[in-house]
Length: 559
Image (cartoon, rainbow, N blue to C red; front, side, top):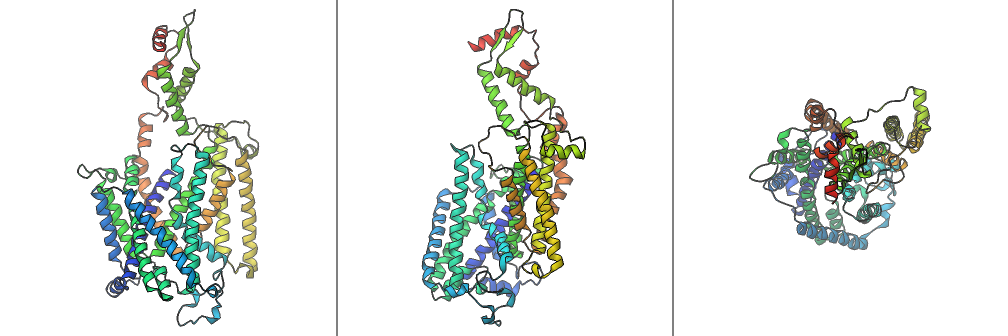
């Protein structure tokens, strides 16, 4: 699961870089009256299904320049980003306010019979009105628009840096998403009211809209603002990519040479060059829409896996990060106050802190607890709804994990049925409609029962900086929405994504699995857990009650 998440993050940043470079090229092309696209369409056109209309060498060159900047060790400038972000917000405000003076409410009430088909294809018109492509069209658009909200998840990584993460993190995420929603919704509303929806070009819609209403000057203002905004997005997309490659290669999941640091530039040169080259090639040969859809699929799957991880971790006996921090805290306390005294019989009396540390040290020596499955299917069903103990056990961990995986599968089947067989015309096909209803009802009921089972499982009560509320219902809803949006993507996008994942799995099972640092550590230390325990505390926990000399050491340290 960790490799899949990391591999999808690589996809997210590579596709993010490619799509932004392609959009940068389109907006700059609009500034110079389509000279770039006309030239490449004439001399480097492609008539290959699933690829762009022409090879965009300009976007490839932009990506190459940014990659070279990163290779030479350039760092992000907060001043640069802040200035360009203000320009972007200014352009959004300008578009929204000035566009309101040129709106036409009739563009939301278009009759498809009145559209001249010699100007546009019938498939681009739809059924007209406010929902020209129906509710399924809205969902397909939502899956693509998810690209616009990518990046808010970084807020959740600041749990250790804020005073009250339980309150601050949810508020920050809601505020961030609300600002993005207001900005995108405002621009989209003004845009579709200024010009008919079927006439909006996909690459540079805003300059085109203002040109159509006679404001040519606004066209250049918007294009310049878009180029500034896309420049910061381009740097922000490609900058984390070498870091992810370095982290995964350091763990052995990817080839080690990806993480080799240049002595001269202090950067992973080879990893940066390869990732930049791949991003440049994709930006040159794949259309902007397919790039955006491909990125949305990877991000949605990564978020779904996060929801699955939440369900699994909530039912575990120990959370690895919490246990390690507790051991470190106990060791720190024991270093300063190691209260070990000798009784009259010569036995050693240790403090509660030291005893607690020894318990964790013993756990570290014994290794990972083997998770035991239920005795039978009947026993498994019984434990799913009536746990034997209030606290997590190895068996309850197994039940919780298995039910989480089953929940993911059942929700996926429901989403698959709704997405591929639940279109707007399904009510006119009696047999298909009944089949879809049966599938949705059966697996929907199973999903609800699995959620009830997960809600009844004993939970881990370790104190962490932030705990997801509403478990398991909130993660289940998240999985449902994410998978449903994924299934709205086109078949071409799924082919691209499948090829990417096939490359990843091939690399993982042929190299990453066998060379991972975790596997090597387990082979070298088969009886150790990941919990650290330094030599001194091992000695304290291993020495029996017949070591009176420790009382002198302990007493001296207390003094």
